[in-house]
Length: 117
Image 1 (cartoon, rainbow, N blue to C red):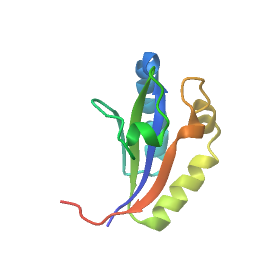
Image 2 (image 1 turned 180 degrees about the vertical axis):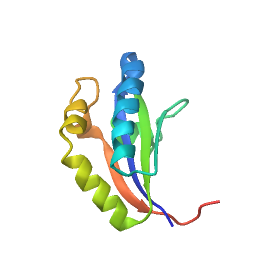
Image 3 (image 1 turned 90 degrees about the vertical axis):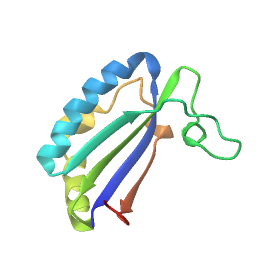
Image 4 (image 1 turned 180 degrees about the horizontal axis):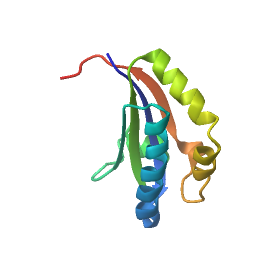
């Protein structure tokens, strides 16, 4: 069963095209490092929940869009190996330092697959 590294992050809406281009570049790096899949998606119609929601999770501001992404790996060891290589990849780390992404409000985690159809 696959493993996933998932991210939810606020991105300035005016910079979504730039984010798409960044995601294509960084996604290619992740794939070269061994990720099996890289998926990025921009939230649409996400409502501010009364208790919890994607917008609440990232403290979404009016000029931002929630972006959800994940990387897929064979298993936990593969996930750990690729993520460690990514953290050492200078081009990858430098490309994530842009003013229109607030990484301090990013929510992330590693998930073990339960069902894959």
